[in-house]
Length: 296
Image 1 (cartoon, helix red, strand yellow):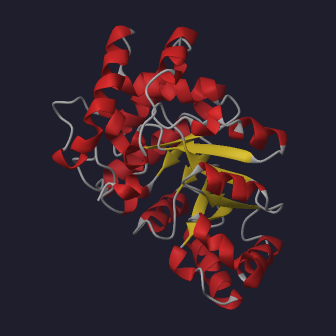
Image 2 (spheres, rainbow, N blue to C red):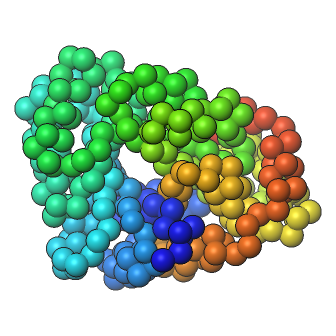
Image 3 (cartoon, rainbow, N blue to C red):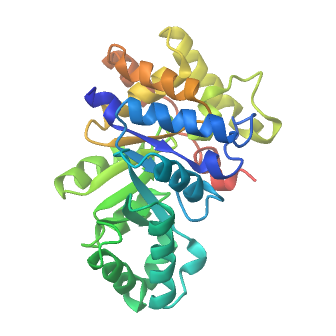
């Protein structure tokens, strides 16, 4: 098994709904979804990432796992943020439903966003502990969006997995020492938005009009990739892999070819440190550019 490839976590929002600014094909057909999951299994990916709020994603994965009972892949899901104010019984019922849909492959349940932490001591934390104790899953985690939310998550002893955005334009987790701090505390780190939901795969001519505000940053990024003769996806993925060597890398794919291409990038020669230095020197991106929830 290739240790670098094994670091990949296949993001599966695309399996349940239309997702991502670079996704022009829409939700994959069932045969394509099967082929994508087949390849993830064949290549030794250990985890899939999904969420209760990702449309039919959990059901698509669960159907595949039911038809492939020997598949060892584990699943990370996220609690629907609409359940933030629910009582303990309702939360536990929702987790049990995810575990049932995923046919026993649920490994971790994450809070979908950091705002849910405000309910931690008034039912949410106890509900997740109860579900963990009843072996519906093994790990409690959280998905965060900002460095401040990351710091807040580190104060919760029972949160042992943090999923957070990190990419060539959003490097604060590294520059503020948070990646290293999580490692020192024994908190598992899963980095997502490595391609900034596809923004880093566009050039200035193909950038959607709705993302025109990011044109200067995209131009700087593309110029760097051209200067070093690197495909943007390769540079982005290898940069994250080198900068956070202990982290797993969450990538969303609509087709097996996309996943295969990203696997090839991880198997290629490691990125030259000079390229990482140039990426670190890129002008800081504004919040609107690096926070996809601000794009609309």
